[in-house]
Length: 116
Length: 108
View (cartoon, rainbow over the protein chains, first blue to last red):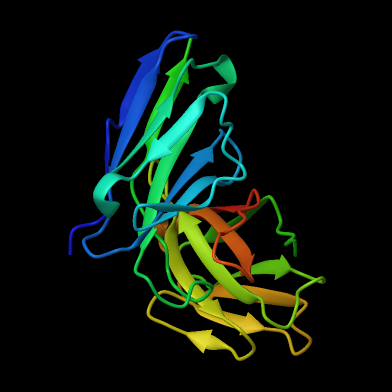
């Protein structure tokens, strides 16, 4: 079974530029998550989708971050404009529609963003 | 939110058992205890989870205290590939709240 795919793996931009990350979840997984992981910290949830609807975006900085999941499959996370503090690894995870608290989340390898 | 407390780091020798502790004194009756680990330059991966009873799988064992206020992840024979950050997470809702975890170093 193919895992969660993310691209690009690395991205370096200057502050105030825009950047987009792409995620392809495991086939058939209805729920998709985006996490931000700052160096030395655990991942922090940014947004959760179920199919193409947003379930939770309470921790997404909506003034500069946006995410979409058209057609309920692939997802894109965008930052516009980027700030120095956005330097982090952006992780995508997915799971099948199921029991929620007992279901495993499957993570991709992440995209490492460096903002100069 | 229910919180967990883990040591920042631990060391182990290769092929010896490792016991990774987690305190969660404010756990509620519906919280599942999940463990994930994150190998260098990779996303987190599931290790094991449980509610009240001890659990075993091919990767590890999870020992849950009778009052559920603490748990221990047990790696029966640590290998160099087990070097990672281990996260103990309580889940009463779908999303997972990660702490800083325990960084496990395995010495040959």
